Length: 427
Image (cartoon, rainbow, N blue to C red):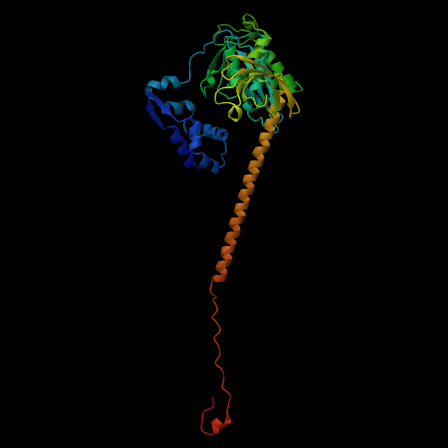
């Protein structure tokens, strides 16, 4: 990529204006949309790629995102954008959820872990291997919102409800189903500032965990066995945390914390999928699944016959059971009943498998679209080449010859002896 384009990107990032006493700046998404055509012409075809390249440029030009923020803010606002240098606040029953990656034997693994902030105890974890088939080269692709929801349900069943959950700003972690579930259970949600790894204590713990993992990888046959042993060792080993004067063992500290308990049915009710659909012919369709629901439609003035509109309803579905829907009215003021599955075009009712099928179909469609665009581009290049060839041939045919044109020879007169005799000249 040329420096000229990056100069335009940085100029837009530094563009500010005063509004209601605050400095307003353009977001990364806005900058990408403004320069999308130029960026795609240079091989950056997605906002994700743009963000990754931009992070490298910011580190080269400014050193860090923090320094960029400080360069485009007023003095009165600088304190809000400085990374905290002091000790982080640690309160019991506060959980941190984050993910990290680890490479081993040419394979890439992603680890989603939950850690209690005060005691430093790793509560649980889940791992996924990055594969090309599932497009899991980034952890927000490796773990879906449903996977994280199941992870939370298992944690709450085993330990209880924490007072607070600390997450970053990844789309997977702040998906609607997760935010709605945590709010339903009265769990406070804290989001860390973007590009502020020092505000997440779990990032420091990941470094220690990976040191242990490098050792156990050599002594265990599989990655799952190695990560399990590394986490168990971390929890049972003494650590010098900055808010304790003496070394402490996370497992022993965590055993002293008391959590709020809740029934499993309430947990499953909190983390349900929500859909807004219309009822047509007493049928609700979700993800190629058809549910039968008899809706007693009340005729309203002006909405009879063909003018009658299909009613809108709100549906809730358990993440482990796709055969039933809990149906509410559009404003969620009263329940309307239960919709039951009557047919399916999908090979499985497991929402995870349905999601994988849909993602595979989307990847195929994207590939088809890309191949079609490449085919059109090739055809245009061939057409342009044919036009250039035809024009060149026409130019050659129209160019006059460099050789002189043959001149017609004058006709020779026949020699007449009579003319010679009479005194005429011989031709």
